[in-house]
Length: 115
Length: 113
View 1 (cartoon, rainbow over the protein chains, first blue to last red):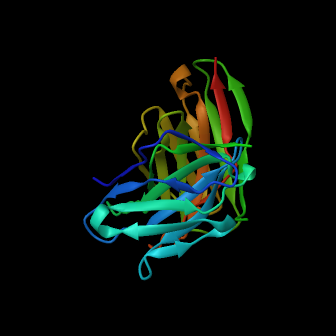
View 2 (cartoon, each protein chain N blue to C red):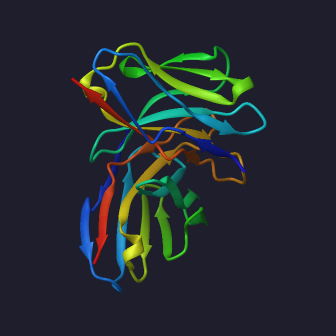
């Protein structure tokens, strides 16, 4: 079965510092991968997605992610974090079992930003 | 933003009572999903629909039922609410192809007392 692992439950970074959130997936073929962000009390907003091609994908709000097949990873990065980036971040992979077409989510990483 | 409306946004109900949550979309997407979000668990799929009157179970379907009589509406029913069903419920939609993401509603916070 497919799965997604986000090893870090909570990360704190200083404003202006760089950020990397880790995501590992299990799937034999090329996965379709996503990063979503959730602000408190809000729904999930798509940051970026990877389907094929260039392994470095750019998203909204200055985020990027790099797909590394050899490491089964899809880590999210941002060169300089802003206080408004404090939120919870979810990595997800598309489920190819059956006809569901749903996304399978990691458990999330909560990002806190220090002034 | 994708046109997804969840109602109600907040609800407090008593154990043993039936509860229905509604998801309404204006995107004409084929697939609709109900997830629940709990601390430490991320989002888990409850039920999904791949067309009118076509529904199936997800990972955590026990105690829940769904119905989809129109493309735009997907209802989630808790037949007899329990405290373990206290959660935040999200509806999501997708056109069902492999190249598109899912779009999420704003969520319904349900508390069962």
